[in-house]
Structure formats: C-alpha cells, structure tokens
Image (cartoon, rainbow, N blue to C red; front, side, top):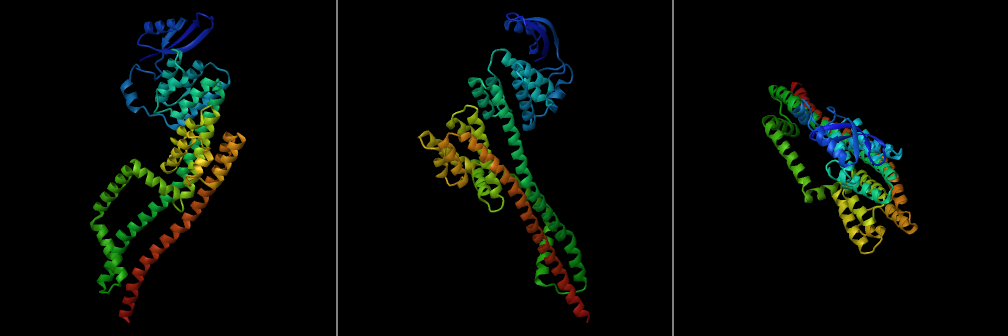
Length: 410
C-alpha cells in the first residue's frame, strides 16, 4: 500500500500537522484524514518509504529486504525514548523514527504502527501486531506505561534494557568464540598430521624395512582409515551436527543441554551468571514499569534463555501465587546462588525489590566479565597441553622407527 506524505490542519485545534498516511490512492488518503478531523492542505506520494507498494523495483526490494535485528530495534527504541522525553508528539516521534531507521522492514513496520496510532489504536496494541520484532516484554511494558502515564520513563528503561540484552549477548558470544576456535584449530591440525604427514613418514620407513612399534602402527592405521573414509567422516559430522541441532530444539533436549551448560565445571559458572544477571535485570525493569510480580516473573522467564533455570522460575511463580515470598520460592529450587537469595530477601523485607534486582544484575555483570577472562586463560593452557601431547605422540611415532633404523645400520 502506497505511503502519502501530507501537510494538514486539525479541524478542532487549528494546529498545523505534518505526517503521512497509507492508502490505495490520494482520494482514499484524503478520506481517511478527513475522518480523523484533518483538513488536507498538501499531499503527495512518498516513493522512498517502504510502507507498501513502491513504484519500480518492488519485487526485488521485497526479495532483498532483511529482517530487523535486535540491534535495529534497540536503536529505534532509543531514538523513540529520546523524542518522547523531549515532549515530542507520539505520532510525530514515530514519523521521525520511520524516516531515520536504516532497515527497510523495520521502517515499514514503524509506518504501520504510526498509521494504527493515528487511527486511535494504543501504542502497545500497535506494537503487539508485530510479535516477531517486538517481544511480549516490550509490548507489556508499553501497555503498563500507558496505564500509569509514565511512557517517557518506561521507554527510557526499555531502551536501557535492550542495550543491556545486547551487551549480555555479546559477552556470551565472546565467551564461547575463543574455545570454539581453539577446538576447531586442534581438530584441523590433528587431521592434517594424520592425513598428510604420517603417511609420508610411514612410507619412508616401510621402504627401509623397519619394524614399526605398536603406537606407530596404530597411528598409521588411523591415518589410513581417515584417508579411505574421509567422505564418510564428513557426512557423519554433518549428520551429527544436524541431529544435535534438532535435539536441542526439542523441549527435552533443550532442558538437558541447558542443565549441562548451567552446571558444567568450566563453562557452567559463566552461563549461570549470565542467566541470573538476565533474570534480575529483566524482572527489575518490568517491575519498575508497573507490572505485577506474577506477570513480571512470567515475562521474565521467557527471555532467560536457559530451560533449567526457567523450570525453577515456573515453580516460583506458582508458589508466589500461593502467597510465598519470591526469595523463599527460589531458594527451594536450589538453582539460585545464596547471595542472590539473601539480596532478594532483603529487598522484599525493605520494599526495595527492584533496586536489589538491579544491584544483583550489576554485580553479576562484573562477575561475568571476570569469569570469561579466567575461563579464557584456563582454556588456553589446556589446549596447549593437548596440542603438545598430540605432537609428542606423533614425534615419538617417528623417532621410534628412526632409532631402530639407526641401530640396524650399526
């Protein structure tokens, strides 16, 4: 549907209005604006907007259009927060965002949101029409803000929260990237040694009719098998990766994998602190926006990203509904650290639960950075020892026959 940019005058207040509207034609656009009480002074079609059909290249633009990323939504939310706090009208703020957003799909979405708001729909209802872009927390916080009349404050908190979510995501990726690269390098070096180096050395010793020790024979057999079945190995590795990915997406598989990640010796402390930090920050944000504790817990459990901790929160929701305190409910699960339980209990006693949750998130953010650094330092020597052991094994498989050949020559 084409987008029309117009200049008009509000029939009731006489105030001049500059905005845009989606319609099939200029006539329909004027009719829509007339129903909204706006007298049109000037109107034209905006070919640059992505709100609907575009003149020329529409099919190609639709095919190449990229879905909005969390970074795109975060930036747009920050811009909207700044405009709202500057007392700019909501419709005008949405128009400004739709003009500045770089992602074409998100630009189209904000055009539609502005259109719905202009038609009398609430801001939360308009955002809720795009659940793949705006999460339930996002829309529920806006809904709570509209009820309490604290939209500028809540939008600022929502903007800060989204920035925090992105920062946590980057920390997790950073924590897992280095070990993954080290493992891939180790596997690559191992395959290269077994497939390329060992066969040449073994062939040279065979020509000298030297009896190979058992460990050299074993490595040579492994090398020969890899060369003969490398296609099978690649297919098996691919099937294993696909199977693992499918298994992790099942409820049972995700729960088992998340439980392992939450309790594993090396990576577990990092994942635990990330999950607790995300839980505390999210719950603090939604509670400070006027959402009730039970509803806030329900929203929070959907963004933690760890099924093992989500199960504990589900149990806590039921117990809180039955009248128990949150700290006591989480303590019984045994999956939340004692320091967190103590701070939650203090927050509930003093009536400063949101503040305590924020303090927990900040404290665990610092611990995440520390754990990532210490885990990286621990993984590096482990991988070096592994690689050194592998090289030592291969060197010994070469030196052993070499020593036998030298003794035979004597």
